Amino acid sequence: MPSFSKHPQEIVAQLRNTFNSGKTKPLEFRISQLKALKRMIEENVDEIAKCLYADLHKSRFEAVIMEKDFTKNEINHCLSHIREWTKREMPEKTMANMLDSVYIVHDPYGVVLVMGAWNYPLQLTLSPLIGAIAAGNCVVIKPSEISPATSKFIAEYVPKYLDSEAFTVYEGGIPETTELLKQRFDYIFYTGSTGVGRIIQEAASKHLTPVTLELGGKSPVFIDSTVDVEKTARRVMWGKCANAGQTCVAPDYVLCTRDTADKFVSAANKAIKEFFGEDPKQSGDFGRIINDRHFARIVALMKGCEIAVGGQIDSTERYIAPTILVDVKPTDPVMQEEIFGPLLPIVYVENAYDAMAFINEREKPLAMYIFSNDSHLVDTFLSTTSAGGVTVNDVVMHLTVPSLPFGGVGQSGMGYYHGKNSYDTFTHKKSVLHKDLWILGEKLGSARYPPSSTGKMKYLQLTLDPRLSFSFKYLSHIMMFALGAGMVYWLHYLKELTK
Image (tube, rainbow, N blue to C red; front, side, top):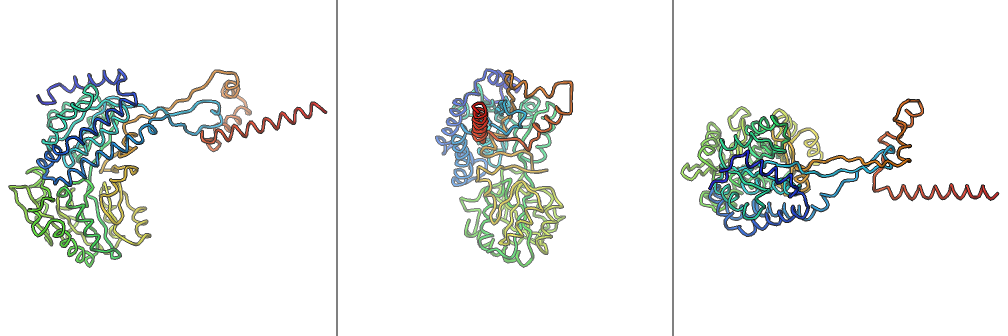
């Protein structure tokens, strides 16, 4: 029975009943579900690898490292920190609230929708799910229909491991997704293209539903003359060729001088042969394009370009060789959209400042890569340009650091996740001020009551000044100071009495 046999309205209603029952809120429930999700991917590695090969011709190495292990490590990180993350926050408070309890409670949003992507169909579906579970939400999980084998795996195995009253997988194509988006969710997390991201945001706006959109864009690589070209080429071509270039943060194009480009092309050609042999088509480590439509789109982007390396294609296997295009013009079709394939255009610039101007004239990318040993130049790039994330002298690797937020800016997305940021994304921070009704607190707060006076105004201006706020971590010091001052006062008072 297909997993969208139930109407989305019925699914969301059932999940909302579960959420309202409070089932997903206890910390031990969240931990148990995260551990169950971890068991799911650990106990079914062979099936996962088989599905990823069927969808994208992924090698077992990529399936394990970039999908299975990445997701498992996210779960491990979450399990190691979730008790700390879920504690109440004790923020600073002003003198006016010195006697009050001020804290922040972490509330789950409720029933949330997580929509995965087809290029890393396991990781990009389950990774945000980890944050949603950790925060205490009920979740509708929508895997991408473009990667049908992995979508089927998620639909079949998630109910075997996770609580089906709280977590439901919903499969389907455009008609089913359209119906799903008509429902009222409390949060929507989407990973995919900018075009579909606009549709998601428009649907969410009808219910004023907050969204995180993890999109894409043309992630530039700048290479200057100070770097080791051999190492640079290996790192760039690894990032470009992983998953046959179908990675949202893959290097999309290179900016460098003509002289640097000549050296880079030679080194890149050498790196490709080192990675995949003389014929990458025969390599078990090089993937294929997801479907015929994307294959035809990528092939069309090569037309009219000068091919320096690669260029071979095979439509029967949806194979496109690692390909380097040189002397590419900003107006060429390959520079008008995110490539999402194994093509690497090189655009010549005169210097780093021309490269910065080139980047700033275009939409803000999801990632930017700077290859330079000039620290001043790197700092100038960071302060002059904008991107979702940056890696210096490497590519893609900023995604592997759980403490770094991952997300886009502008057309490349909104919101971020990974590590604690995933938990925060699916959490509403509820502010709480708790006052007691005892006489001292009432006396200290009475200056706000009419009738007004200059004295009351000055008192409130002083006590509400945030510059006089203090943190709870200094509360013990303040109490000790107050106790000491009180003792000094009473000793002085007793001395006066005994004179």
